[in-house]
Image (cartoon, protein in one colour):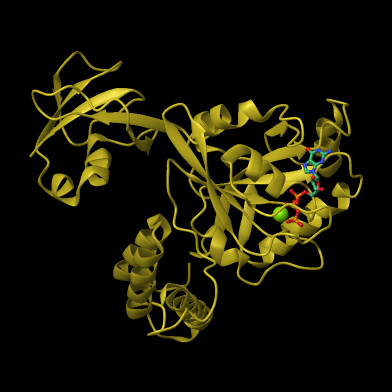
Length: 339
Ligand SMILES: Nc1nc2c(ncn2[C@@H]2O[C@H](COP(=O)(O)OP(=O)(O)OP(=O)(O)O)[C@@H](O)[C@H]2O)c(=O)[nH]1
Ligand SMILES: [Mg+2]
């Protein structure tokens, strides 16, 4: 945190950290620029805010009249219960996994650097979906200049490696270094597994991005030693949770949805209108610790603004219990909002 920032600036920065929508993030950045004290001590930060405003503005600019936008979009609008990005060295099998898990037609190739743009797809899990985003590879030599911007909307990362390739011992640290240059830090900490501990102490920088990361040891069909991934982790001093899978045979892939659900602390809430049965097929999703008010925000801004109380059915309440907006929700709860 730069010295002498005002409460007004701090508020804008907090809003920025929470904002997920690119448009909302842009507004927050503008507010940060407006409120940041303009003195020598904040010069770096001012420049950083400015360049991010420029980048996002370009990303979000409408297509030119009568023509296409100047370039492809690198920002993927988050959808579903969470946005999870596939990151990894070239040829690790990111696209093969993406195609298999989401049914996408992302390009797969036997040579490195097949994927050039972000490709979204949806992974179904019970009655919800996770958005998986296939990305171009990251190597020690090359990272797409826009990759840091794309990761801003991510909730988590799948770090995909080819376990049968001894080269991954060098590839992983090189890749992490490249990401860190863009202020993206892969973390072993997942909110649903370890509880929310907030940002690490060094996280004064508003543009630092810490992403919970799952190591995906792919191509297990080529290296059937189930202990390989542990050996690798040991060797690299990594503490990411890990899954051993094969995009080719499908082995291990069934664990991904349940892992994400648990590790992200996803909570499904079903809404109902008074006197009607609950809408059982399309839950709203929030995170562990979120409240009735957080659910109301997803339903409609008006509900969030004018919410008086809710009636709830579920594990932590008795049937039809009246609760306030700050009441935490649990997975499977049915909520009837009253304004
Ligand atoms: N045997 C085996 N081959 C795989 C597996 N997953 C991917 N492959 C092969 O590995 C090669 C690379 O796969 P891609 O899915 O294109 O890899 P990628 O990580 O998306 O590659 P880039 O886009 O270049 O970064 C292809 O020839 C795939 O058929 C797997 O689990 N087992
Ligand atoms: Mg690819």
